[in-house]
Length: 521
Image (cartoon, rainbow, N blue to C red; front, side):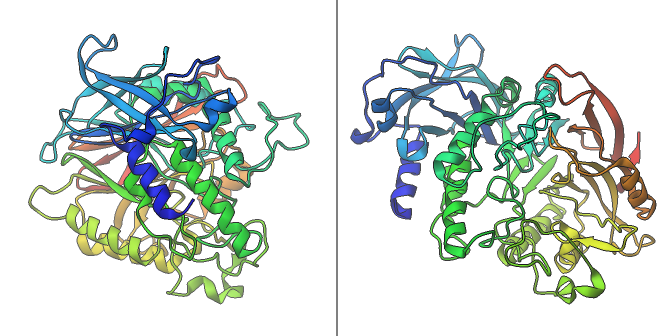
């Protein structure tokens, strides 16, 4: 399918209005629950939100056909006060996913929604709209999380996230992992029979596996999400158009992975409209902004699609690894970028807009994939896959923050499967330089860290800007935001190998309005 046809299908499928004649279908006779993967919503705006589901169909004839899915939005969970309803198309070319882009809702309020196919009715989801653009709401509760490898742990963290009743979940990457189950399963929480993902069918099956988890489904149904990706949605440590294998085969794999990501996330069809950064036609733009009135401006970043190849990494290496600065001149090259030129300019403009005195944003939030602050290892090596491997790009971002001076800047990250809390200095190599921002890099939902706490403690001792560093616990972050204070609570599981694991608070940090830098609560 060429790019034009794909975009046309996506646009039709996302329209919450009358369907074209080719999309009509009779209600199927169903043998199983077509909504077994749950429901979700995402990217709230003051007047609407995206509603999502993906059909699971068993009959071969049903799998080949397009289906008309009905949807309803109501003020109440019993759907006695329906405010909107309509039909949407579930196309086989889009994996029978449904993306309904709603408009015309009231700002700053909660709604309930559901889908129907034939006699089948989905789980009821709960979502909300963002506040009106000029409003200054009293509070925003964000949950942020990343990295949920299936075999490494159960998704008990998501059960606790749903109980926290957040307004919004920020998912910061590695929603799936592409790997097959390891041969040694002795220390795993669970296993699966899927092969290493490389085709569109493989990636669709992998999302179906992850979305079969009831705790993850409950978190999706609890509130809207805003999602971005990292590397494992495609391939470990890939960079832009480069990965393992020859260029042509990698681009085919990447295109399939990106399509599956769109099919399985509550994203708008507009995310498909940006041309690819290379010669392959299939692209997604996942960097975007969400505004929560004047309280918070969320800049969701993409540090995979546009990045330079990791410094001094050999073409066929399976991971980026680490280097010694003296042995890798390319590391400091000013031409190297993590976000790409266009996204850097877009972010610079967004920070400038946040800092304008008229209706200035209280909290500028950079929601991205990995640790921003440096980690100076006692061994002297430098990790090349995080911001540490792109020092010129990190300096440019810090310069933008210093130049525009948003009222409060907070960075959220994931990827490293560890909890880090850091002061972000104007010059990351000079701890005596002014503090510019606050950073909270969260641990994983389930993925192991691959290191020990003794090693992490040694790193913290070499990095005075690091206020907390823990690698031994899985969980999520919770940010309670008001006009005068940001409070981050790091929540961790007792045992990620148990689906019924309890959770506790590891630590809590506060950032006061106008005073950059976290302080332990």
